[in-house]
Length: 396
Image (tube, one colour):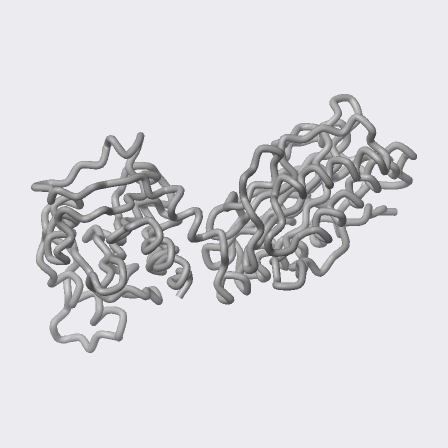
């Protein structure tokens, strides 16, 4: 199970919540293991997971009839399904169906509740949650919680649930950590594949192709591939273009794919040929800053204190004018989980959090430099999920 059930139950008890309803794709998958395709590729399609507090009944998935094949084919941790909508799939009654097809036939035979709202209303009514206090993840209900409407709704007390889920997701389960570790290793190997072809005349697009092909070969899915060279590396969100590598160019990777729903986000810098003194000294300062942040990651420390220490370290070690709005963030099934390593953050570091600690620097006319590592917080400090060093790479 991906869901940190112990943490969810504790937070529901502390906040007086009778149930939570996941609606956004990340939270639906997190709460149930169910990856509803249409949710992930466009806005609008509705899928819900209702997870009651202990003693209030069993969790339910509210699923569209058009996606029941995915429910039958995936390792889903919630067995109670409410179906809505019509979808036609013929069945050969003379055929011997495999396990997944037999499960599909069973799911297609469920009663049609008509609409997502009607199905959700019936589940809440069946669980006796009328009048209950329910945290509704408004992330999948654009544009806000005000859009949340049930057909024949029970008189529930709906409260914002998006941040509630983020608080629960902040501390990862062992299964989540292992998926994040694998996602990070795929990103590192994909950078190596791209650097293996780096030479004068090779374009950013060619580097990106090698990066993404390796991600796919290793079982990941491409998501983030900001790969820029030369002065273009200073674009914070640079997208690979036709620019070709030249001697002395910075090659900046701010990248990460998805592995079994879990994200990577790492950054590495290489230089084609001999780097300038400015590149060396600035990159050193950024690298030391990340190392300082990782050293400070222990349960109980304030995220804002880590921000202060990282920025001060970079300034002291080579970039006296260094400024940032944050120096890292949590990561998981979403690319930006809690905690937030920013000066105004009220987050407290907890054991089991997985973070990206980063020190980007962008200077138009010069280039962009960045170090970003993924780590997991243990009881006695941080364990790196990286197999490579964030040190400057020189490609000869």
